[in-house]
Length: 517
Image (tube, rainbow, N blue to C red; front, side, top):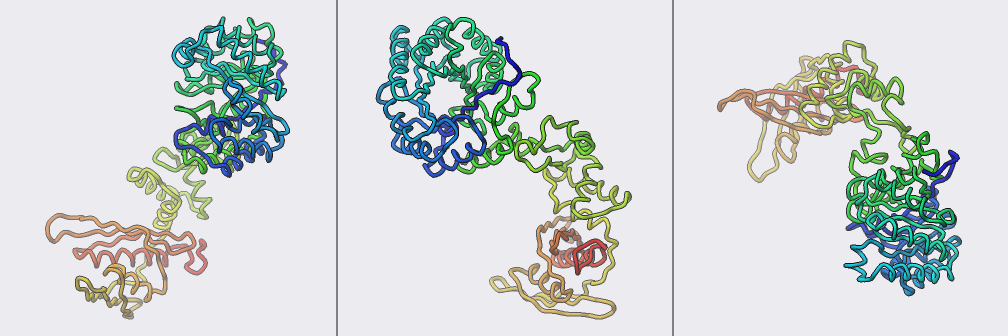
């Protein structure tokens, strides 16, 4: 392993616009590519591989546009070891302030035999000729021996030595098919440093694929063994299982600087923006448990973890969410959550509960968690409102008069009792229940939005009691559950809605202001 001074820079070479776009279905138009390039500029990557100019007119124009518009990073174009490819790359890169032609040629036996149908000496000669040809047009030349991880080390060392002498300023060692494992790949990089006489005249780069899920691990092992450029993509997109993930390699180096003894120049606070942009333009959604940028990367559900994070973030977070552009950690409330996190979330929602009310609400919360996968803020508000409200029947159902025929609009007359007075209103609706709820709104002068309606049989038989459960949004965060039961499901529906209205009136939530009183 080579000696390091503890502050060496690892060059971040982003290939989202070239290799990343090769993900099935991830094609971007020119406008989208420029938008991504601008975000990569904000991210402060060192180099952008803008495309493969010979591949298509669209790719050529994209590289040309990015070369003209983006100033700061090196702009690179890919080319096979063919003069026509190199010419196309140069033409597309002409306006780049800092340009690089990236030439590649396969060197493994399986590629030479079945794809190129050439012998080793022919490959060696072609690689040298390509680098020399490109060098006449551009000072910054990168060469990649494709499928390097499956190339015989002795032959690989000969190729690397030859292309450096021919003028390559960066030599990239690709694990093209994601075949290598970290110890093996690290040893290969170490071998090249020991057996390539001119190795110190070029930057050693790595480009790892994720077929075995080891792209980041292989890249980090290469850094430990002297590689000083890593080729990567946002969200790890790319051919097949993808590439080394930019966010993972950058945060790995940053978080474990004690091990890697180096740094990158990436503005990590732009990582999440970059991730979301790539999701938007490619349509490839990041898995929730994806490291660094996944929805759950800074989310905690387990009660022990939540309690620890609330007391000291570092107990269960090895990096700050702010470092990658995330506002804050999320305490996900579920069946594994504890009282501490529950109480904190309820407080954030505006409720200041005593220990007794918290305990009752928490027990209701646990029961709900067993019934549904996700518990949302609306659920918590409804639970708390249910528990803190001492329900007084301000309005009571007296009579329902329903006129309804198939194919006609239902009309109802609802009579409610209020303080020994009977109040009636007529209404129509999409169905009898909708008409009843509209009539109740007219009487109570409280408008509610029905969020959820469930009906179930409490007893068996033809005269079974039906129980209706509703969830009603009365605005300003006031979401309340209501329950009603009757052998007549329409009557049960009316009672359930009235139960929610009466809870609202009787609770410590002011109907006027929506605030706790």
